[in-house]
Length: 242
Length: 242
Image (cartoon, rainbow over all chains, first blue to last red; front, side, top):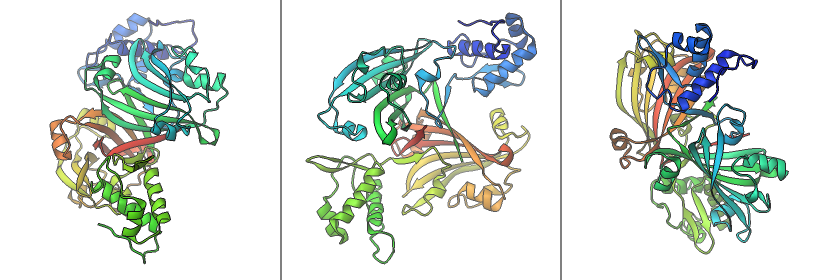
């Protein structure tokens, strides 16, 4: 748990915003409950009500709370809003955030590709791929079930790396000299099956995103295919259309 | 049903691609079934096998078919692939396509906004909105259940327009002088409820997209809020990430 650090140089309202955000994600402030009043929060943190108001404004912009006249500030479903306009990586994006980010390796193995994988990764059917299945955790809460397929010729030893604490993209770039230039991602709605629901700790038959991402190095060379089951109760995607 | 028009000036392979695509969407070639062979198709259309191959390549790129060695060409689930990188409009996009596009108005009424709508559309709680619920059809198949909220001050008579055959965006621009500059869209997975499933003619509790789009005129003035239930068995979204 974070607390306000008055030496830190980061504006108080931003620090408070992060602390409150953490409380929302950790269910200390449950969905649909009332947030403590500005006065109470100002007293707790030893700051002015104006500072609290600025922190609340940030939370409102992040879609985590809303205000209702005569009632107060109410907690919304704490969905992480993820832009679909830029390359996002769960591991990278939250690396320097106040959240405790981690992964749990569910399985890893060396396989020969199915026909579908040979086409998508542009590899021979007799070649080898690494298949890594990881559960991505956010403050110890399982958020995404992710299966990566990486051709052996791209990263010959990646299966033995520290895949619980390191981003696959970082490993590819830093250890294997793979420059990632872009990815194409498909998004579909899905109802979680039993295995997914158990691993993600959600009720069976919950709505989830199913995404398939193909990540490309220069010359449009596929370096990874990633299939993810993303909790629909924790994430929403957004895009801007012109 | 379209047929090949040799006078038309459109390359044969593109015309054939559209005809085959229509057959896939209309279930004449059902999912997982084998496509007729190149020879059979060449004979049917009176073209060379090379022309058929080009048409099939287009269908493959559109994600509608795949080839399996020793088996042939197989029909994939016919999902419409929709880019999330540019402003898309079902009505506009398919206006000049070979598909029969239409809408069925389910309900239309004048309402006062909920608190949520006052914030999102930046209107007063005592103002009026038009609420229009439409089922969007594609070759008579219901694809999207769409609820639009348009402030009365933006388009005072839009509820009386021909909303079954006209795009709301076209009406706003052409009849009401509203210039649409962009939209922000949120995407979530959802399980269809009974009403949605009945209207969309899908099994109850099917996976669907739930999207909320706010459309903006210059000065970031909201002109429409649109909530859509989009069939997950017919659509997939994609984006390119850099």
